Length: 113
Picture 1 (tube, rainbow, N blue to C red):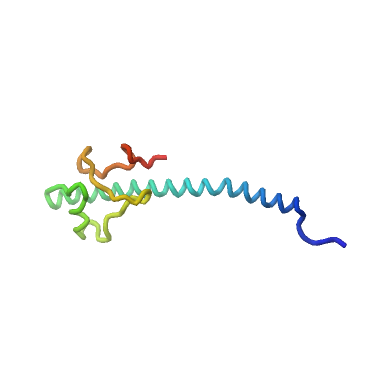
Picture 2: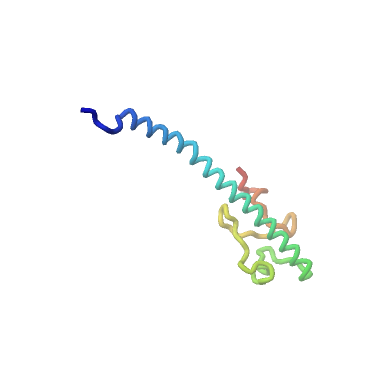
């Protein structure tokens, strides 16, 4: 009488194949996710820099480095200023170059891969 089902060798081969696929797919997913967060951070910086310039041209003065002026004014960010999606920190204006969001790409706080 012939038994129906998988042999131990067939089962081991399936487990090995699934493990190989997981070893290939999981790192690609995590790298892609990190790159998306970095690109989102760069986009947030660009938008905030545009709003800082708009604030200057509208109000005649630059906002404070903590961006509290823009945070409290609904004309610029009605839903609030976004935080960095990589490390969830708040954006601040840097001293050099003046009136630009501190870079997560430049300096010690880099998110570069």
